Length: 193
Image 1 (cartoon, helix red, strand yellow):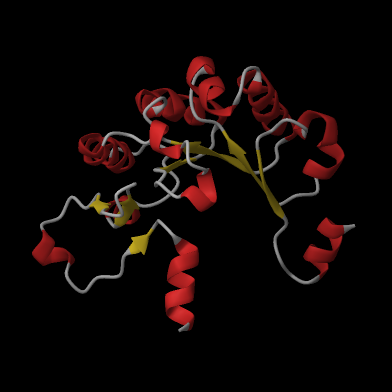
Image 2 (cartoon, rainbow, N blue to C red; image 1 turned 90 degrees about the horizontal axis):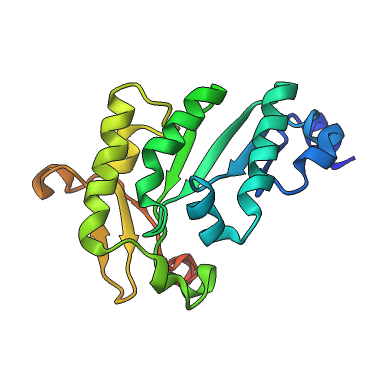
């Protein structure tokens, strides 16, 4: 009923899912305009981040969505455990004819819990990861967002500092809008004050 209500209001109906229930709910999935499936890499990397057995379930969801022809894309959280999975994820996206969104997490206790610190990529590795994603996008790989959006991303670290993933010199960045990650609740409070 919710999907139909959303559509009668002229909006697209979409879900973001770990895929666990997709094969059992194909009746609902068929009515959606878009499905975003969380997939962080091959089985070992994905299960390390999402729990034992999660990869098999998410791959069943990917297969099911591909089989019924629903519009879907992959969303990958790039951590120290999955940063070596970028190429595999791109190959998987190509195989299914979909795009992949790469998310670089930030240390945010409110969103990810205190254990997030343990799975953040090392500060020195972040620019290299972003460079690989940008190079892949510029070479025609199925990366969802633009190279420009990856260049403008900042990641908040546990010490409160921001790691700029820009690949442009600072003088070329001054005055440009920035997509910030981090403590969104604190920023919302600051904006409201």
